Amino acid sequence: MPDEADIGNDLMLLQTELAIRESAARSSGLPPASKNCLFCGADLPAGGAGVQARWCDEDCRDDWEREQRALNRRAGGGPASSAGDRFVSRFDTD
Ligand SMILES: [Zn+2]
Image (cartoon, rainbow, N blue to C red):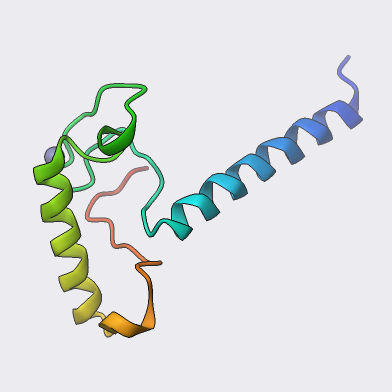
């Protein structure tokens, strides 16, 4: 029978890790890594690093960044109000 304290510890570690990951993504102005390209939705190879953690390639990334800027502008974000701390997903990841 599992120890309840152990389960609590695991949960807390997991939550801490998620929070760290989330804040890292936020401070870099990027959404968390995804297994689908954020721009075109194509499947990405597992365990990708760098640009491939989020996009197929630089082209998708550049187009996505351009789109994000346009969307943020339209949403009233304005260039001065944020360092890119919000992003708009065009895909349901659930
Ligand atoms: Zn793509």
